[in-house]
Length: 393
Ligand SMILES: NC(=O)c1ccc[n+]([C@@H]2O[C@H](COP(=O)([O-])OP(=O)(O)OC[C@H]3O[C@@H](n4cnc5c(N)ncnc54)[C@H](OP(=O)(O)O)[C@@H]3O)[C@@H](O)[C@H]2O)c1
Image (cartoon, rainbow, N blue to C red; front, side, top):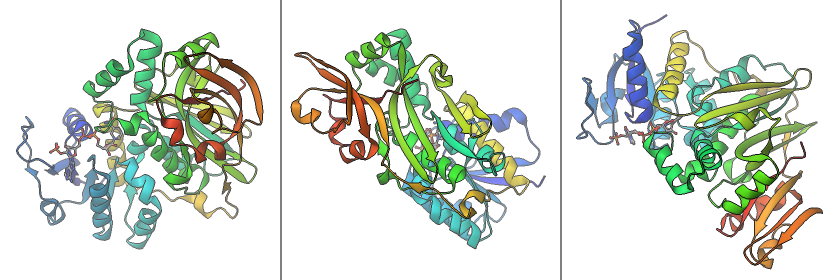
């Protein structure tokens, strides 16, 4: 294993988590040489060399690995590109940056023959990317579905199991370091979306841009929705979903009413759970901590160690002779709560299976296409509406 001198960008939850993990294992081969942060004046309480100037890292000839764990996707993009162009291997945790730029970054890795690893970006401590990349390489993969956002799952658990208010649950998630500094990223499904895009590149070989994918979160969920779920003996979970049907591929992030017989029904708190389904082995389930400084820090360390052994992603699925075609032409059964007739008319149900009306709210259970949901993604985000997939099983 070669010795790594790390230039670390970011010393928040994850950067600090990585630092602690490294202290604990006391490795002879991995050292943090210098740490670049935004605010140099902040008291950090550790003995390390801090800077606010990226050049102090890029111009340090001893540094042979960059680790980027900052919360600014644009700056992260600049750091990762600069590292690759300087042929310095780089580890990143920034799913938003990857969700937008992964294709260009794959090309840069090839052009400069330099690896970029980012297992920590997709599911915290669960090594989903490397598994999809290596183990499921030649498999007849059908779908990858899961809870990919620890913070929203934590909030849903507190609401469902402890009857906590949405606001208190969010505050607690932030205090515990699970939530992103901008919580809408977690709550409105964006964080899950970016992870889903990364997973899809490794699972099915295609990239679909964020604005093409129906993405909907839990910020408008209210007591009526929770009551509906309980009456049906289900729990609401925020699920990211990619599935292949012959040559077609669907993707979406949507709250789902999950029945007890599903693996992800029991995924609670900040944990993530990913169900991988294949043609011949049915379902496999990966479960673990999806967020938090130490779990994510240890996932970053795993990428660092992989770099030390010259591991790199090969993106094998991208070279398959036939790649699936992304479509939104697929029907889901959904539960849709709304207030006004105008809102009701946003969704064109091919089949209405159940409906309820009252002065306070109305709901429909019926079948709609993802394309229909996608066309009204923003209107559905208003306080009076909530939509959740309601699978048959
Ligand atoms: N938290 C998690 O559980 C988790 C899990 C998986 C992936 N991630 C990803 O890991 C990354 C970091 O998350 P986090 O929770 O650790 O964030 P955080 O606690 O908000 O910390 C962000 C850090 O980035 C630094 N920073 C911001 N802009 C910078 C810039 N332009 N140059 C240098 N440093 C800069 C900040 O410096 P100051 O300290 O000076 O403000 C801070 O130390 C994000 O991409 C996140 O999506 C987080």
